[in-house]
Image 1 (cartoon, rainbow, N blue to C red):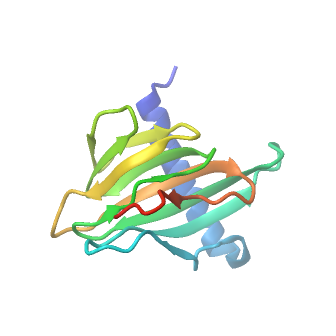
Image 2: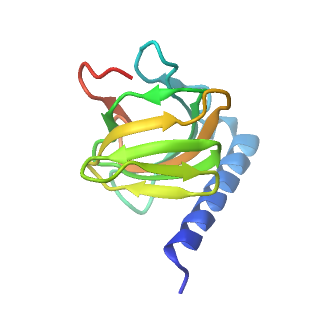
Length: 157
């Protein structure tokens, strides 16, 4: 049996490999030019570059999306939710401080990962460094057509 940490790492590698292959073979399958800015504040914010977004052929009404989330130095995302999406995040570079509602603040370093259950409230996402960027590979399994991220109303970044 494969442990959850190994399985998560394998999923990240498979997703990145698939995304890279799809991006190089079929530019029309890539949503990659889209950039989604987070909230505006005095601190830098995160941005998301879509790699692959494709309806799941064997799961009606669900879409698979992979993306790279960039967190510039000292960046903080606004508190947010990902609707009913299941979310997997893998730290590609840097160190990220994160907190989901009803969970403790956790620091994730390069090579570590976490999951967010559908409906989770993400209270804190920030780059711990004031000099180096952080980068995440994020995978969503969401309802087709649903927004991938919704910032809390009036939430500062």
